[in-house]
Amino acid sequence: MIIHKSHSKTDLIDLINDIGLPIVFSHQDNKRDIQAKYEEVLLKRFDFKQNFYKIENIDGLKNYLENTNPKKTLSIKEKQNVMMICKHIINYCKNGYDINISKYESPKDLQDDMDFIKQFGDIPSVRRCCKLMNDDFHFGGVNFKPYISPQTQKILDEKTAVKGKKNTIYKLQIRKATKENPILVVFD
Image: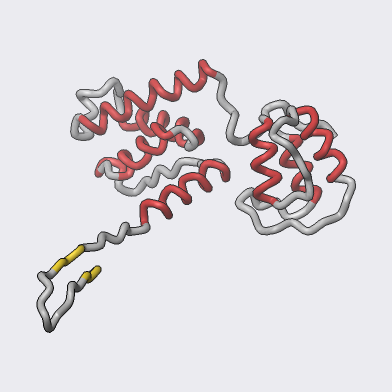
């Protein structure tokens, strides 16, 4: 089996940890060593734990590894093009959703650009554009939902969980000691 070259060593290690593959690796192993360990494990039979990749069996894992990494589909030039489109859309949104101030000739041009960039939801600027454009009253019926790879979605979910936890603030009250009441320390 040939693992597609777009899967990095870090991606392969993350896959081992998230799926629960019975592969023992060292961080000193290079990508080729880890690929060899994958080939050994794909011949064995084992249970997959539930994962955000939605890989349930050996065939699904083989299919995932043989195809391009969904996280790495853009070249540098393509990413620069997507970022430039994002800048134009953010400029449109910051200027009160006024098409006359933007570089766009019509709402159709704007929607075409949105439909193009929303497939690259791993880029934070694309997610920001989609969020801003969902607030645009000109496109009231259209929902721009970016495509986000499972790896990035997991990271975003973890960040949301951390932000959701409220930090508890404790207050310290010290009262003067008397004969009837010794020093009392209260945490609220």
